[in-house]
Length: 122
Image (tube, rainbow, N blue to C red; front, side, top):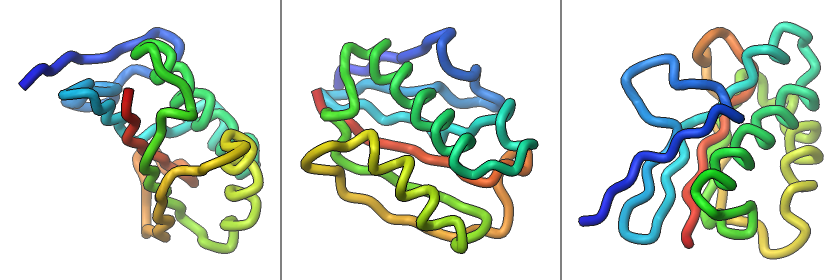
């Protein structure tokens, strides 16, 4: 198995014993991204935008972009924010969006409101 750790200074450093992303056998597994600097504002759209930008920076570091994403997982503290999150998230996929699930959770790291992880191919 071919395995490569992907890291960029353009996205937040890991806050635990994990990598920003791991590339293995043509797949890129991006760890859950959060928006520490935006979360405190309470603006779910701004927070989601920053999370997606973090994901974009990691994809770029791996030589990929949003079109390479095949699967997303969204974890949210309040499912009432679903429409706002979808609006921002959807703006990153103009056609053929990836498979996805969205799950409401009791709590997220650093008390953020949304966390998104992705799997990309390329």
